[in-house]
Image (cartoon, rainbow, N blue to C red; front, top):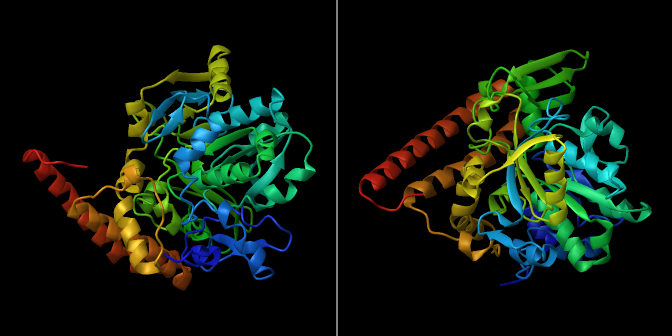
Length: 445
């Protein structure tokens, strides 16, 4: 099959905006019509195309999948699981110092502090507030580390990292979601000197990247008419459960508006405002990071409104940081089983790994692109789950088109409601069929 261009990848919406391809002053990032950051190659398309080997969704790269890169970067790591990758240990718990000011258990902030305070790195390249919104920034002062707390469901890009990293003295740690971490590993693979320059990566377990439209919609639903800033996506309720959190933001008069996220329904299982590329990522637990962190959506942790994290250490250094934190009582964490960890991300494993083969087939029909994904995830699913996959893809696409057309929460909800009902009906049918299969002792998923 004809080699796919990097331009074709972007135009087919398989770009998550990591920015690894935009590492030259002539190239930059821009917003597209769907509210995502994508590369602008207009100044030098030839130079842009030469960066295709750094793209985490490069369909022609049959050598550097997550398994192969893990073997290169985690040579010391012996344990391996077919769903979560290589690992040292898995834990659940929280940081005693940073839990209250963080979205979940505060483990990322704790790790950031240790990396700087113990001189493991000299700089962090992480997402923090900039002029009322959020983007990747350099950070060096561990005493101000609380400024970096909180989850941000807004498009960001690593583009400045490789434009500026050579100007930074010392070592750098970077945090990111799976595709961003893979892009960094690809950069290190082709430029081995960056392995020493970037000795530690913090992975954020991601349920799917959201468009800027997601925040626009939530701000309107919270009661804001017009501009907003300093939005907070995970305001905890200590008297409720971990999933019962709120969204809030300031309006142009600096008045704060807040609402419970449960009032807008399921924004994750439906795929509303999600990047298309996320449907073609089979890395659920950020397999290429030194440490992977996510929400502990499992009992008993999920019952705690202040939040807990699941933790996967993949290197000896990462595991040492966590074990030392437990020993010093800075962390309230304990080792958990692999089964319990997997339950915390069960929906994501099912959708992204079990449904991959079906979605790849649809992508080939629509775009003529054949993505090389790991064979073990290319499973045939029953017809009732194919129906669910089809409706999720349709709803995801429609949500972006409808918001771009309406830019009004009330009108958007009116037009998206019939599609949401179809998905709900098809999902109920899927569950009934699965129940029947269990009764008949047939295979279920």
